[in-house]
Length: 199
Image (cartoon, rainbow, N blue to C red):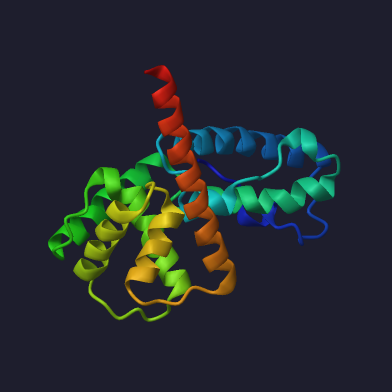
């Protein structure tokens, strides 16, 4: 994606000599391509990534009525196109590289587990600092938690892992875990009832 000089996108630059229509025209051009990339990332299963979430929600040109609003948000679009991970191809390459690295380290991670496992690792790093266990140990615990969770939802897997490995959940997380378990049990019972009615 071809970009103008960096100063064009600096919302703090003064006396630029650039007209309001020029700013809006550039914003519209970048936003059109931004929207296509974000849609491609989502359609290819990368809407869970930190990169996608970081740039999600940049306003449409029609939502910005003032030149100041346009200039403030142009910086976000500039940063988006300067980020090497905002294309589907880059995310696919990263996935292949990461899976190979894990496999080389003895972790038999598969492509269809990539999203779930990376979410799991991100959650672990946010909850437990300096966890201090090997990749293979974490993967084994992940699979155990996944198989023992009532339903394979990310949160249940995370919380099950924490319980099985002696990590204390804070009050909010514990309450959330209990609610998830209750909801899962209810859904299981509802499915049983529907099946029995069909017989």
